Image 1: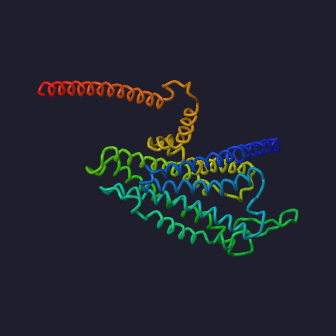
Image 2: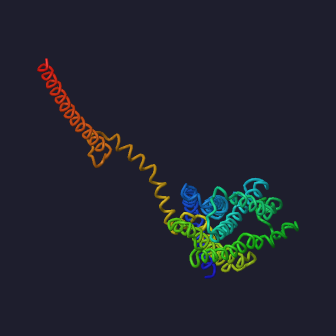
Image 3: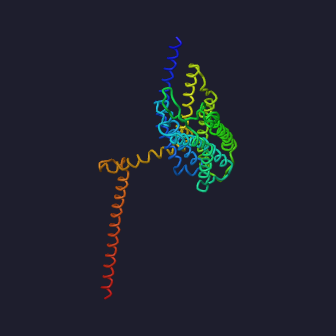
Length: 386
């Protein structure tokens, strides 16, 4: 009875793994990558890129795409298809792959703090700082990237070890092995998860939450009285702010709780199969929450801001409109004036010109007749005088 129950539990776990890592994650990678890149292109259009918040959020969308193509793709291959991409080649490939994935993930988290700080700083000032005169974007990328490089350099130097499997085969374990004979491996195996949790999740979440509270206070509850800005500019600024708030709330609601609970409930020493299966199912649910955020930048911006929806409509309809006008122009002379208004304009212009020419001819005829009459009368008077 216990064996049959255990087999059913394992079959349920395998089914969940297949649905999550094969189907859902594959869809998330494709749809999320396209949506994030479309979000970045839209935020860098002329009407939106004048706001530094939109520039920062465009970088966040690109970084979220990097997370999808590193962490999410690795989970899809390893847990969905059984292909351990990070262990296919040598130790250098393993370390470089994990280092880049963790560096991009950390930069994506800290960039939310940077964009929240920039929005908070803008919400306190009367005049909006032009994006061209604000070099904070490049400085922020450089400083945050350098700090995260230092915090993640242990992946590049010490990660990975070859272990012997049960069938005496050698396998490259691209992790920090807690049962290794190397003390460095054991040390990082103990502190690595908590170091990642504190530097990538807890501190960015706390700072983002505090800054967003002040942003809401300064932008909506007690806004700075700015008589120099028009009401339309104020409305656009608030719509840009709502995009940031939506992305921040998504990070706080999806990534932070799932990552914290995943770290607290992580216990690889459990020998009970039921407890292990329960842990794996919870881990799958947490991974769905975490990776859904990184593929939902377009959803957050589209649902929270009408100015973003308007720019999306302009971007998507620009090529179609130009092509549609070209097709109407070459459709032939049998088209009606309602379909081709420029032909109607040309015909009206021609009619006006023809009526003008007839009026001019009439005026010239009257002028010539008057001149002829005047010349005849002058000739008669001259004859009588002689």
